[in-house]
Length: 468
Ligand SMILES: [Cu+2]
Image (cartoon, rainbow, N blue to C red; front, side, top):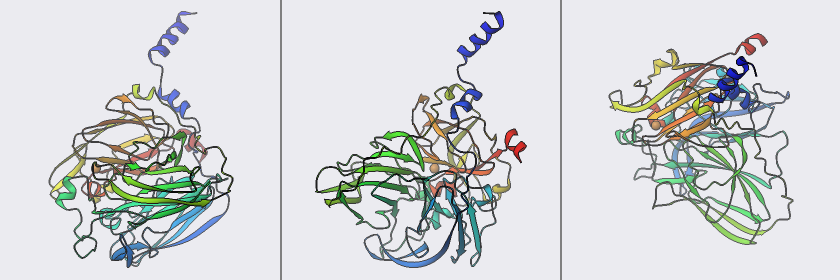
């Protein structure tokens, strides 16, 4: 061994990971480009006030997509181009954000950053070809704490090229409702109480808008259950009441393998796809509850098994994604630290800050908090200096959790939203691929409204520039 190679070997041992090796480990975990199959799927989407029998069935004045709460579930196949003709019939400006979908930046639905807000009576056509199959959702990005709370959210399911042979594919949207004595949506938003706590938590928890949701299945069935948390602030810790589902996808993307959902917290913005097999009794009942805040569990929904199905359900779990371990990522220098905190001031009397800055509307045009280069490994750290919860959501990219409070965490999946607990520090790693200006914000919508938002910019890599 020459002196030079000996030196290189020593350096490699001392520094086992490098940004380049972490990039190499990422491999082709996420496709860089969409692969349009030439098939365009057109959808109409109208946001308008209406009245619907929700919660326990009484009429509630809501704002709804296509006259329903939850709004429609749009289903397409990977490779299809989604074209949504959107019309705003609300008394306020709005936009539609496609949460978790790696869209072209101009389709991301962020007012004054990626598009002008859509005025009452106005319309806009969103068009994109999803790059990833999975469970996504959409909601306004204007006055979200009010507009989402009033009922504006829907689901986008992007099926695989060859979808696994589940007997059924079911979407459950979790939400909670703060109703007044008349049973209507409590019409004060962003209250001091909401802002000082973990946002607006309702007095009714619903699945698909109802407190009495029940899924009828037959023994022998194997169901894909997609959970979406559309709540402004509430976190769910589901207890499956004796069922033993397996997580197969988180935030849309397949996990590296099937996972036990025990203890998995579903924060606002998060999605979890479950593989549910009903193999035993020809009749059974399971009551699913949320146990995030013990000891009072919230009823979510029930599953009733009745009868027998002879469907063939012996197929392998679809959860076998390539996910980098990035165990060396934690030792890479931190590219940017984001400190999360609050202070008095601002239009609501309390502001939520990232690095002592509370985001205001005009900040959409301000320089980004961080500029990243596409196709390079990035190490970010979030330090929660407050006692409240902050589910941090990044638009336009997926990341992997590396550590909580400095202790390495091996989550074999990507996320687009991670819950940062009281006084907690978390580290994440990512390789951004999608160029543009992307929001990063707390998905407790009241915290975001009161300032906990910022922008990140991803610039094209040399390779991407060369291809243009
Ligand atoms: Cu927050």
